[in-house]
Length: 198
Image (cartoon, rainbow, N blue to C red; front, side, top):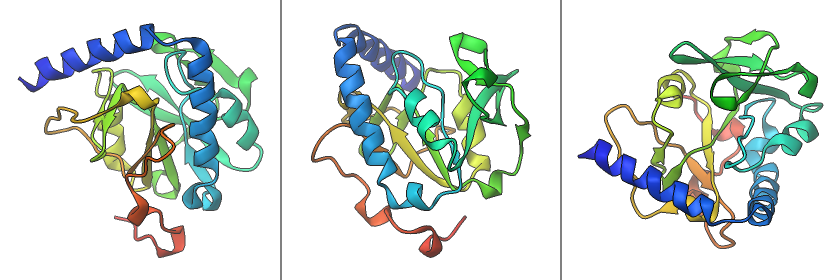
């Protein structure tokens, strides 16, 4: 039943995205990443795992370029059935990878304990931090190995009442969206020096 509900929600999100114009995507992307860069954990972070967005995801491209000179930016790359992390060294470093995603060809990064913040896309999120991915399980296999604070980013219509979850689905700690009054994690917005790693 859970997989059926996930499939139905993915189909609904595809339809909602189809009805949106590019200008709305751009506007909401700017709002989302303006909020992220003022977040206390982002400001204190040295190493940040981001993602190089597809056209139907909040646009990370200019944000990555803006901050890559000040922070160590990591991007995921598909390797078989898993994601591996690589250091971003500039847009000329990107290669076309699986599923049309541009992936970094920089050095392999394995020091997961040094990651300060993870920023994650999703097909949908709910207010409890549950995330619906595209169905391959890449992030659900990666995230249990990373203790860093996890932020999901999404367009306003991707925030839903309830995301169906399974045993291996991983929650995010906080969601940043373009809703002007949305805040699902005020108690968790704490500085790194007061944050205990698990």
